[in-house]
Length: 618
Image: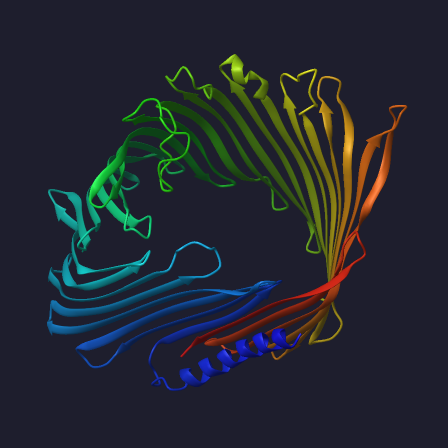
């Protein structure tokens, strides 16, 4: 108990120290900082962030960004910590009207003593460069400097450089032209990290509401990472090229048509090096084409769209039949065979206002997915059919009473092409009904009551006689009540209650019968008293209660199902919430709960959840 108090107090000490530090800032300068402390069970987390952008003089400015996160996991074997520190400092000085000198310092320190893996990283770099704006819509920036990197016990030092160029929205020959180019690289003695991005966008507006645009782009990415303390390196390289065309056409004042076409080609290569010698390498080529047509309607009383799209993808590997059973790399799974896939999609969304009191919102979609492989030893070839629909109906009886009715149906059918996996063919059907009533009695009482019925049926096409039935059903019934009552000008009492009944069982779809396996009853109750003082300070003490009863069903010698109670799980305890916002520039949030927990063995234990957040603009 004493150790917990010390950890909580340390969170408040950090909070107060941040307030003292904030007062040292110059008045009138834009500064933002936030600090937080959170405890959940045996995990303690401290967060801190700081941002300022100060104009030091008419020609110079400085920007500081600091993010720090520290977490502690308390186990029986001791405390395990993980720290993440990220500091970014940028200095700018105007040499001329269109030229600025830019200096930057960055520091990243990551220490992980929780996962058991060697994830510690330290990265520090500094750079000096120029940012030039030769024309109002043309920007150039180049910088370079030293960089130090430590990970997996390896210390690297080298050079970091970057170059960025952009010419945006240049009008020429009645077309809008934009060009962007960015290059950045880390050059160490034994490894490289590189990013290259280039793109060109062409756009023309023919008439209001009718526009055509073409975007051509490419990017290259390389990451070399250590995989062992011996200095082994895995090199990940990716090259992507694409063309994206968008045409918008105004059919009428209320109807617009949007057509999009996308072509994408991606090459990925992962290589493993040991002592500068190539050990193994794998390649993959991805190609994708996507075509979509969208019709949009925005008229009086109705707003919505209809979309049809077609997507085709292919993946080709340098080795058609993988020689290993495990993934070659943590980054990319290179054990999948060559494959092709197609997807057809048809969807619609509409918001219809029937009258001043009635509104309908409807969403529906149907898609077909096809997956094929040429590998004769692979039996994952399949077809998938998905049908999703949701309907929301809203009716306003009067200013005090409103009804929302939600209906949803989701269907999913999986069919494997080869007989070796046809036993996994199944239907997944989900049905949901959820009506909600909102009722107000004057300005003092507000009541919301909601019911929900949900049923999920998973039906396998072929049930093996000699094995257990795999088809199952999950059903849920829930009632939710929320009551808020203002008993005085500053005091509001609120209560939330939820009852949820759940049922799991084996399903015989053809006979429309079920063999119940287990049932659960869950109950939640939250009670609060909210005291509001001049909208600046809110104090909310409360109480929370959770109960769960579980039963299992077994067959007796006569074949009848007998229900046996497994036990009751409960948790309960006080809650305290504090909101303090003396101005738009400062707000403090404090949430704390202490709960006693009883499991099926009637053993009681306690845990605390604490969350403190401070946001300050000054």
